[in-house]
Every structure is written in structure tokens, then in C-alpha cells.
Image 1: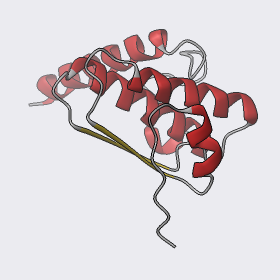
Image 2: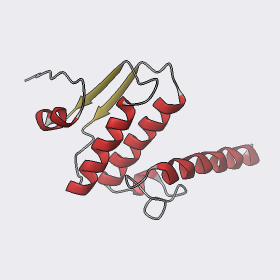
Image 3: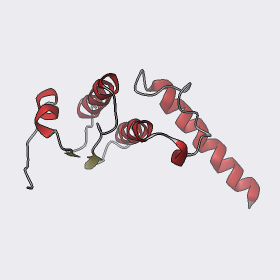
Image 4: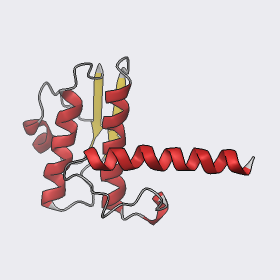
Length: 124
């Protein structure tokens, strides 16, 4: 069983390494090594990583119907916020973009100004 788990971990690390190589500024392999435990990442690194993984999942699953981002800009500096917005735009621009992209955030107004085809829902 142990060799199987080691093989699965190595394949996962290779997959994440490829994601990081394609991230183009949102994350870099220098900052987030795939063997590093997710729990050891900073809050901002976790936000960037989950957005990148959402993009890669949407890119590799053309029948995906729904992507949900919960506070994707929280704990980020201004440069990282712009990188996140660009990654969200990439999700919207995929040839087979998800039917629905839901983003929960405190600053949805400013976020919606930068994204195409958005609808705001105020739940307060």
C-alpha cells in the first residue's frame, strides 16, 4: 500500500508543479513548492492556490457547470489582487467556461467592474 501512496503523492506533486509553471505571476514554484503542506501556506498563498486550481480544473473539465470562489481577494496585496482578477478572467475566457461563476466577497462592486457578464446579489 505504501508504494501506491507514494506514487499517488508524486503524481499529485507533478500535476501541481505543472500548474505552478503555468500560473504566470499568480503563484510561482519558487514561492509554493508542491511538496509543501497546504496548511503551511499563508492565507494569501492559499487564496492564490485555490484560484489557480479552480482555473486548472475548469480548463481540464469542459463540462464543468459551476465554480465557486469564497473571498478570493482576501489577505492579498494589491499586486496579488490584480493577479487573482486576471486568473478569474481567464476562467471566464476559457473556450468551455463554466456556466456559472459564483464569487462571494465583501467588495463585489469593485470586483464586478473588472469582470465581464456579472450580476450582483446583495444578501444583507
